[in-house]
Length: 294
Length: 107
Image 1 (cartoon, chains in turn green, cyan):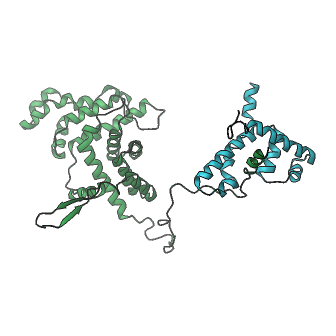
Image 2: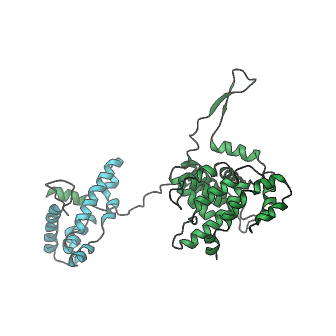
């Protein structure tokens, strides 16, 4: 009986129970008016834009375009089911949706991929939140990327500097920073693959919403995996937006009849045109897609 | 159906296990978790006591009142409160199966 009394005595409650501290420590560095000069309201510039945010948005754009152009074919091929992509596919899907200005959908698929320890997706989320000015969330995702600890800096011997080795940082942020500075936004043409995929995917997701009205998540529409593969196969070669624009004017979103191919001015376009009407237009005018759209 | 109703009538006390003095005074996290686990079992047992036994147990041990104060709060004679307290301890002892396998409930 004494044991039960000991147990009971240990159930004595605290006079003032305190809530456990937050799992993610909160830093006060960006809280307004905390240690900084008091803000005057209305301020001359009440919402000053942080240049970091613009940089992040630009980096994210670069990363998304690069990922979609370079890895979409490989990544999107692995679909677990008709609707559910593999983590790498989810990352690409997020990038496509980001490029198509569907931020919520992009965030969802990145989080899906990041949950499967896809570091690139975590990095996308980091840039995404940083671009929105959500620095705490961004910091959290940056820690998830483990970008700080991988990979180890590589040591290379620069030519002409005998005996002196230079360390080269090959981590994702550095590579990305270099990449985005090398590619000037104005002169950077959006590749054909990106454009083609971006034309298809938002419609496919609209279909997905129409088909599954009960789900809040952006599920791609029916036959998404096959369509994406078809698009990627059709536009696998590197072309600039100029040639694509020319082609879309001729192909258009309406289907071009096979006879009008005779009007093509250049032989290289004619050669390309021989297989494209079988792929792209078929995708663009899928019966369920046109039927489901409001 | 009567059984189901009786099951639903048990109050949910488990959350209190995270707010006990004992778990706060525990030194290292392992001790603290052990204390929380123990209190979870005890609170589970308390929630299955008959109402008047549960009342006096919670007031006396969990809120730290004397039996006299608890009797005044409950509006019952001191003797009743004292008796309920004794019976509650015995019932809990059986409920928690202390002498057979410590820390395991018999429910």
